[in-house]
Length: 137
Image 1 (cartoon, rainbow, N blue to C red):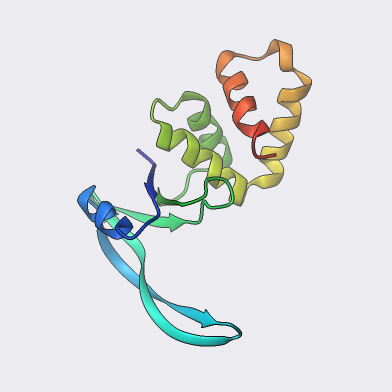
Image 2 (image 1 turned 180 degrees about the vertical axis):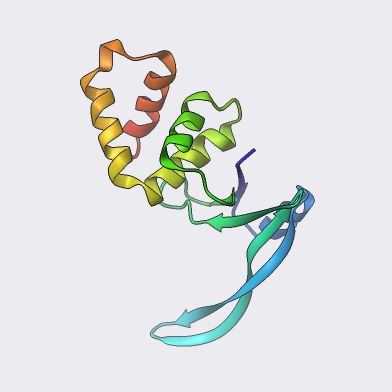
């Protein structure tokens, strides 16, 4: 498991803790009221799960109302691509897609274009990836 999704809501942090994660560190975040800072709050920055450090990734560009935790250190583009093709857990598959979109967009775009060009000569896993990519590209 490299990624874990949670639904954003009033109980998100409780759901994260219930899943076995614990907060490792916090960061201060400014909350704005118009152009002025209304107040500053502390939010979890890193989590621990089975001895590994996990970080929160903003996944709202692709999946609204979601909170994505990613195991660190992050996988490379090639490792993420292989995970997207071979993952048996939805969280790992979609998490790989989100992280590639955020950190390796140009490589992901090139991969998408090559799949489109080879559309008839690609594997079932690549067709599934192409369908997922078509929704975000």
